[in-house]
Amino acid sequence: MISKIDKNAVRQKRHARVRKTVTGTANMPRLNVYRSLNHIYVQVIDDRKGNEKGGVTIAAASTMDKAVKEKIAGMNKTDAAKVVGAVVAERALAKGVEAVVFDRGGYLYNGRVQAVADGAREAGLKF
Image (cartoon, rainbow, N blue to C red; front, side):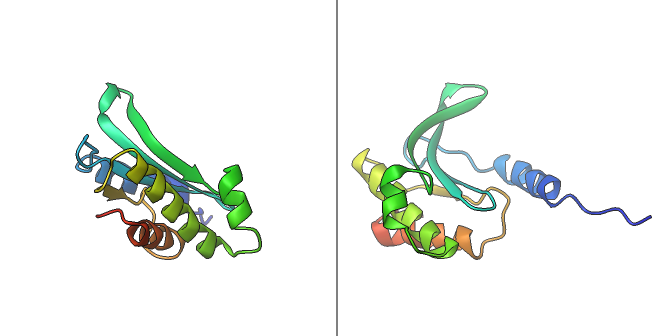
């Protein structure tokens, strides 16, 4: 019998491997990306604050936000991801964050994940 590969389990292993070395600090927080089938979620996280289970979210945006939903009406998912990247960058810059470490969440760096990074860079975040 042929067994099917669990792509999400492979992604989670890849993400855990990367997260051993990539951490967010107060000077350079982590820009985390989570991609579901229809939506994309982005957070700017300071891993040094908070408790041992997780850090403190400085800024966040997703395609589910009311402000973002109005902007992305009629767009495809890649263009919507670019808008989400720009929105989270604006929110992070408003909180005083200028540079971040990009955490692609174990996903390949193309498509929507790359669009988030491009949108955040165009809005002024450095990474």
